Image (cartoon, rainbow, N blue to C red; front, side):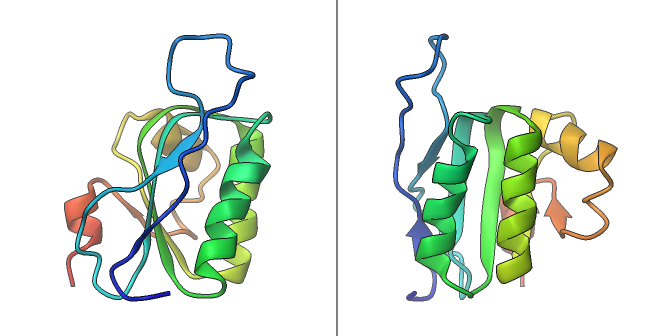
Length: 127
């Protein structure tokens, strides 16, 4: 994967019962240096986590990746499982602002200790 490329494919699940964006990994124009960035938004859960994280894993294939969860509105244990799975195959860093749904889940499970977690994308991209 070329340096600085933002990975992801926008996925909208028809299974959503709310009007909120449901499980998206989209593209964001950022200069990420050598690491690809996957930007997530909306709800990540049992219905879409395996598919969404699978796309990211496929696109980064063994390289390090920064997963931006700042715009995630809901994240469940299946999403957490998929994040752990991708971190076993790739060096992973995560953006999850304090108080966000993703950060609360990472804090409760103590994954902030094993997966480098940043408050903002800007801080995560600092050399």
